[in-house]
Amino acid sequence: MNHDKKIKHISELPKWFDLNNYTKVRTLSMYDWHVQLVFRKHCLDCPNMSALAEPIAIMREKTVIKLADHHHFNLWYGISCMMNIQKFVTTQENNAISSLTMRNFFNIEKFLLLERKTYQPELADHVIDIMQFFSSPSHTPTSGTKFLDTSDGLNFNTSKQEWMNEPIYKSALPELKAEGLINVNLDYSDDILIEQFKKWLSAIRVELDTRTKSKAIKQADLNSWALYGVLPYLDLKIWERETNLSIPNRVMADAIYLRGVGGEETVRKTTTPLVEQLLSDKILNQLGGQVVLQKPEQNPA
Image 1 (cartoon, rainbow, N blue to C red):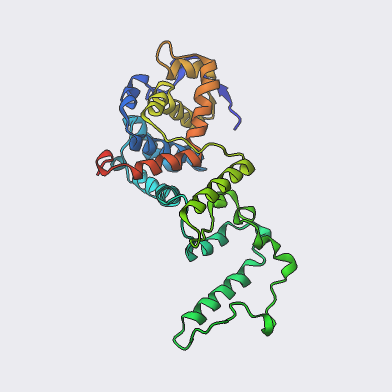
Image 2: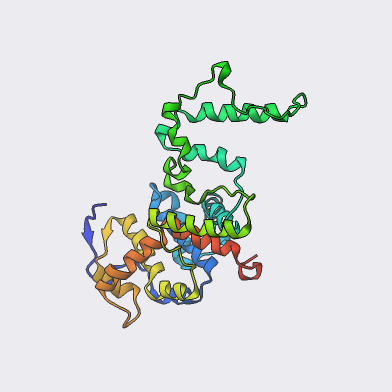
């Protein structure tokens, strides 16, 4: 976005902005942080800022919002949770090795790469036909039954189907996070399964260059977010977007930091990349997922 004018001094910032209003941020719970970040991200992403004028005005009055403060807060937080958090929670609650379900397979279609979707429908239709056939009352199981019989002319164009023999993640969009979909043969002993899983995990980590898993968000992280002015920074960025003004890092530092925390370099090197990280789907989903997985007494009713 091109800004018409630069703010030269904190005295030019809007009257509603007062760093003293953010002292309560130091005591926010993980849930409270998630609520604040979700709505502020929505403000920054919304193509029509004027539509959010009323909830934004309440946010500026309250500084730390609660879902009950405005119906839009509750609505958008609910939408965000339904869209993003469920997948995180489901993943966290599963064991390292889990059975694949038909739901997994049929949900894969919406994540397939465009060039793969050409062949997906005929495969899905065939799988459904097989399921219906073997679940019909008239079917009597017999040894030697063929699950795939091409004698009737069914042809999946085998030369173009080699990708179906590859790991799913090689054909799926990254959002599916299909790298962890595995098959477990329970005919083997636990010792062999555990050893084989360790080898598989080591190999997939090398291939994907993901040696370390995302670390859990802890209280020390929340304290850091407060120290480096995440919420006041976001609120000024929303105002900046609304007014088409530009706040230089020097002015931003004077506005969002307590004395001795840092200057314009701290804004550039610490707060700005920290905010970008916190508003990423990965971190927001992780934060919301941890909130859901906390004990009930740790979250508001």
